[in-house]
Length: 339
Image (cartoon, rainbow, N blue to C red; front, side, top):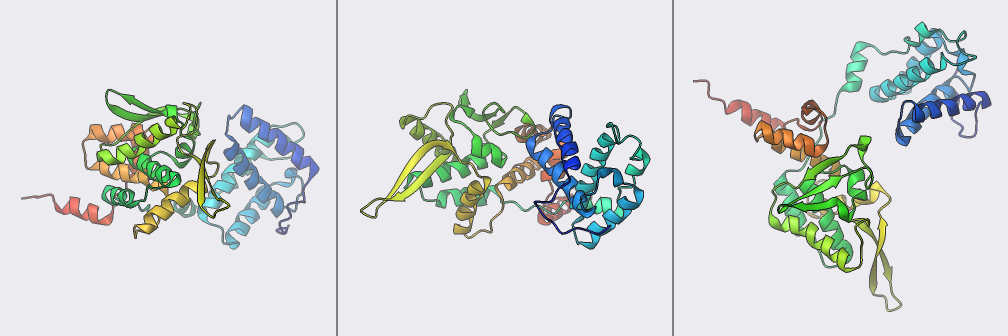
């Protein structure tokens, strides 16, 4: 078998019916979200392309070996290959139990889809994640203009991210009613009923004790939207349309619609930080900023940040976001006096 040239119009009708049933299985039984299902089906289609759209019953251990070698020969990354064969194995294990395939797929040969231990370790390795310091973030926010509605919105957006480090989908879909004050303290009530939330986990994302002007950027913006007639269910960071009038003056209109693209959010951050003379780092990196700062505080504070970030385990906070910089690592180790 040879790797077929990708053709989005090519398909096997029998395979398509099987994949449709598997999609239903992932959604109803495994309760996977749409993105996870789409990713799994993409990996399965990659395998179909390799077998030139033959039936899935053609799978065997020999095919598995050649398929894995073909992915390495194409220069695909270890992480991609690992995800691909994991999705394919889950699919084949489901398929082996389906009528018409029970005698055609050897369950034991599904495990032939594997990588060496070194390759598995490489696939799991995490690239060092850069992040800003709070000082850099605060300085950047204070340098941002706030004359137009869009500028005010963007400044409030980055301020909120500095305060509670939301995931980008949460930042994009946060509502006015999500911003809550209790006993003089503010927090975002992250609720999947109102926002796009990973794993649909509800949590309280409390504001960090940053300077008052950073907090006020968010509060004043919220109050401004209310004065314009925005309701509780409207987005905190709505679309702002730009257009020029017949006299060639710029006119901005705030719409009661949430921003649809994560790319739009990233562009706001990119413009702000590059204008401040800093390299662009994704908004998600603010979560690492919070985690690294928490490591220099008390264990109780670190656990509170864990809850703020929505992590079930402290290991996730430390392993995913808590890697110290080399400079901090050196400082901490060298500061201990043995004598």
